Structure formats: structure tokens, C-alpha cells
Image (tube, rainbow, N blue to C red; front, side, top):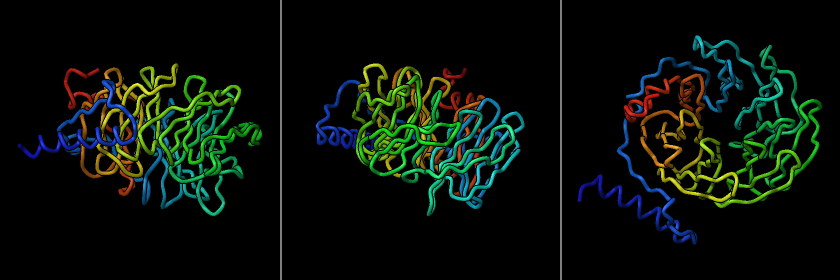
Length: 337
């Protein structure tokens, strides 16, 4: 038996064993697809910017790409038309969790002795407010709905609903302990429980808890697209697809990328993930199937926008722009948009 075939069969066996041991049947919707890893070197960036000692956390607006860094503690604004760095906003703590935009502002959770939430004006690129409320843990996140900003503020699962006008907590929703990462989509706040294996949905209008959905172990980062919510599960390196209407899991895709860090985003009809040493994986969102995977140095956070993949190299302190069409074409010429 060839080493490649053996690796593929072993991966499938490990995934099946985990599902059986956890009481989860290996249904037809659970996809175990092995692909031949490619070198990340085949994807040639059109631009690479060095931002600091580390680079992490990407969010994209209609006219900018924002990225966090340490060394310095800051967020950086990139103009996607020119690929130039146009602003750096230094902060009083480490930007340690996912970013969000809303209400004319960039919201940045900060870790440190006194966790805080920074508000940066998107027009002036200036820090305007430091709220005395912060993330429960690193690798968390913040979300913005139509009328509120949402942040989990302690390890007991307290989801704070913050009034963006006053910075005051207007409501606190109790979630399962160990829930850290909120994400807004279509009238719902979805929060992964990294200390478990589930996703909680909350009505963004009322704050009512709607349902809890099983995922893979250690779900952390999440996105929405192609009629589904998707979680990147750090415990076993899988992605879970959730139907937002039934709030049920409709499939699991095996990436073989377990571990801390990482990110997930939707763009071009695809789900894109990144992890250190596996900087980029692409899933066909319609078929829920892993198509391609690139390995090598770099990775850890990404965003999709302005016809590009914006991919950080955490330890290198850089962010690179990779043209979306180039990645799709190199994966499969038929995917070219």
C-alpha cells in the first residue's frame, strides 16, 4: 500500500472512530475527502505588507482591509485599491480577538490586565472610545447587529448586548460556559462554545436563546454563506455546516487541521479556512466538499473581499493579498469566476 493511500485511509478511520466514540453516526452528509496538499508557494501574492511582530484578525469593509498586530499593539488600515497601508491606530492593549465593524466604527477587543473594547472611527481612523468591558479570553470575538454590539465578557458565557451610542450594557444573555465567539447573520447571533462542541443561536432582536446545535469538538471561529452557518472546529480540524432555519447540523467536512488559532471566511461561493502550517483550505460551499489545501509557512487569519484573499502570516507579522481568481483557477480551472 502506498504511503499516500495509507494516509488517506488512516485519516478516514480516525474521523470515523471519533464520530462513533462521540455517539455521532457517520452519516452520508459527513464528508471525509482527502486531497493532495499543494505548496502555498504556488499562490503568488500581488502585495505583502509587514505590520508588526505578529499579524492577526482581519475584517473587511467596502473601502478598507483592517488587520491587528502586536509589536506594536495596533490595528492597521489598508487601501485595497492601492494595496498601501494608509493608517495605523495604536492601542493600549493587545488586539486579541476577532474584529467587527458597525455604526461607523471598528470594534476591537483588547486583552491585558484590564480587558477593554476599543472603538475606532472609520472616517478619521482615530481611537474614539475605550469601553471598560472586554473579552472573556483571547481568540474570542465581537459582533455587530443592526442595533447592538455583542461580546462575551466572562468564562461563564455572559453575552453582553452593548448600546453602541452609550457603550452601556443593555442586556446580558446567559450562554453555556466556555462560549466565546459571537457572529451576526440574518437576524441571529451565533456563538460557538470552544470549551465544548456546540453552537448557540440567539434572536438579535429580543436576546432570546433559540437553540443549541452540536458541532465538532472545540468550535471557535465561524462564518455564514451559501445558506448555512459554518464552524471551524479546533478539536479535530473539521468544519461543521449548520442549517440556519432548522438549526441542525447538516454535515462535517474533515480538513485534518486541529489546533489553536485559525480562521474561516466565505467568498466566491467557497468556504476558506486557515491554520498555521496549513495556510489555506477551500471548501465548495454548495457541495460541502474539500477541494484544495495549501501547506507551508504562514497562515492564521484571513478575510475575503475586493476580489482577493487577505491572508496573514501570524509569526511573520505580514498580510498578503492573493487574487481570488488565481487561487480558484490553481485549485481547478473550471472554478474561475
